[in-house]
Image (tube, rainbow, N blue to C red; front, top):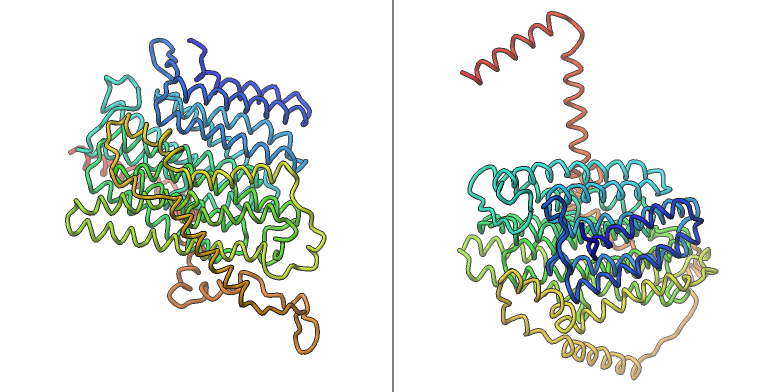
Length: 605
């Protein structure tokens, strides 16, 4: 086995994790920083020159193409930036474990991406699920163990379907000798359909797509904020959508109805999660639901069968990891300074934490699809791709696609409304008296969020020149797909000038005619007490209590729509049933034996 960049991308972080077991915390941080800087260099080498495949016993284990290099580059970039944030501020009681798990996770994620052999992919995929669980149990909230268990059951349980899918793919293509990609399996029988849905379930569970999404908000609420930005906001999204892209681009050939099913699941992911996000008072849980909602756009794009939408879905995947990591880390800075992430207990921190305010505001604009930030362009590509797909479809398909598109656009509008609440509740409004002495975030934290916020701007203004040209187009070309002409219609510089002109005109009018008097707040002729402070979440309580939505929200809070909770209740009900019928009486056991024999004879004959 030849040692090259592909081996080093896995081996270096794993070796660092083992060495870190014996080092003090400060040296663990230094070693992690140096190793991830080296991995950044290796990913740059891969991007420039590619790599030779790695084989063992005449079986190709590791190889890369344009898609896998694209994912690898951003795994290293995001891991490095989030590590900068984590160098100061991780809770003391978990620092040792955190800086062992961190490189371990990077190595396992790299292993998933470079694996082209089914067994290798399965091993590294399962290991990433274990580190996800271990990060979850580092949380110090009372619900952290339950959230960790839920994460393991949903994500780890989906591995069963991944195993089933991989075995069936080998059964369908034994000549490939467990080589996974470039199979182009036709969905023309029950076996390929089972294989397809097995892999699809694994991809949805890892990325957090509906209905396998419920672990993401709980993980986001209860786990260390650094691990939330690191995994469900970044690396797990990259892995899940990467597998989805492989499914639809190189493993299977899908009929139009399957694309429609995937688009529908994406639209449901968008709208259900954003509706839940709007009513949250816990900042981390709000961001967790938005992490789910944004996956819906990626699923709609990558799983659409439209080249433009596929490009938009891949671009949105990266955009999401950038702005969502920025938002989680910005909230993390606030949480570390104030001791809370409850939006009702925050407010007025913009003047106390100005850099964090600006980075969070940029992230909020980006996730809401405000031009010229990066989230707008990738969503625009997805919308255009869905419309292009609808043009060549039958009337029934067109109506269904347009409904899904309307849900996605409406979800984007609700995202903007939700982040108006998020920004106002934390940084604007009246500040609680207990937060008057809050200090700004440490340098390492605002440097990390500042880099991510800068990427939101750069990937919006220079989308065509950087991510589309150097990463997305080469992937499409490698698959032999034709890039649509309409890709060049969007001019972010012109949009920036138009928005800037309108903003400048508004400021000039305001400065020219403003008559503002600043005064204290009084209630009944006396200074308003802290008790009467209006928080940024009050308006959204009315949405929660609207008659058409109240029943749905009540059902969601009782976990009627949580596949984990529903599955648990069904499992316990079945267990109680079998306990009841196995009461220890010999004649009852004889009856079951006779019934079993009769059923067997009926099946055979």
